[in-house]
Figure 1 (cartoon, rainbow, N blue to C red):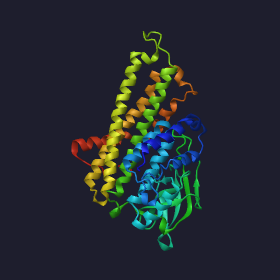
Figure 2: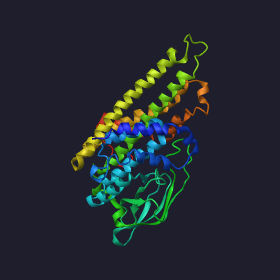
Figure 3: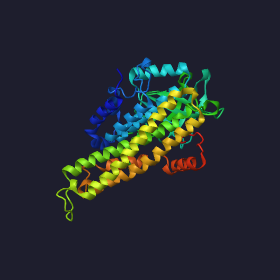
Figure 4: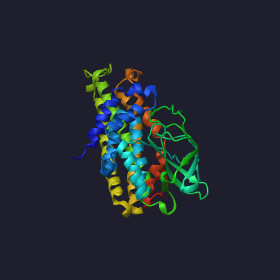
Length: 389
């Protein structure tokens, strides 16, 4: 019997919602939250059933991210990044390497972190005997590197200059998480720095390359996939903010003294504000569903996927990124207009939704995605593959 992944994610989200504000303030390492995801078998959702995975699709994975984001944006980020990091086994590694890591990952429901941020200087991978490397360097932004079971790392081969993708397991000697993530939002996303000091990377931990002939349409799905994660995460946070605000409006907000309405929940201006936000949210959710189905189809196409098909997918997901980013920043601020001055109390914690999306939407400037969509519409172009396009 197939798993209802949306239901599983919703159940996990309900547990996360109980103390989401308290955990946000504590700013602790999300180890208990990671275990909660494992208990719901969400980390293995995308893995084949033959390796103890869930056999789900990217449409399922993105919906799971969205459901978790309703309750806790930080943990939704951890889960979404995990799906992309783990998918590199499928998209980049050869068959033997892929099966080895997938079996280990599926059996223990591993969470995969990353140290791939292209804005940081590349890490150095110095070739060693047997086809492996010695890894050194630092990444200032590495989601899940401190809490994941394995970390996907991108670096430069010091001899050839090629972009290499490798795996480093939790507890490996020479790996030091910085413990320095203390930002405005996404406080439990374990996104601090990580330093690698002469870390041994055996040949079986080398997944492959991300440039040259290795940069196939399917291997390049890493970028639209992570952008789709962003879009679904933002949409989920908006729903969480609106649901939280609505409960406050119904139970606590008071009608304005100049209003003829007996309660805030019946004030026509409050209703119209909610109505506009909910209408836009439904449109964004529909676009997110469309993008999820398109990504699932591209993944299923395998090596038959063409660059043009990949480009069309990237533009669809770029549109989702633009719509969801704009909506998230606006809606998580507008909820205060329909809840009132008392809703700004730290006890209420309604600000965490805005803090989370404001922090994460700065990950890469949304105007560059808008430009991609406009260039495609006017000139029929597709962006060249990078870790941002």
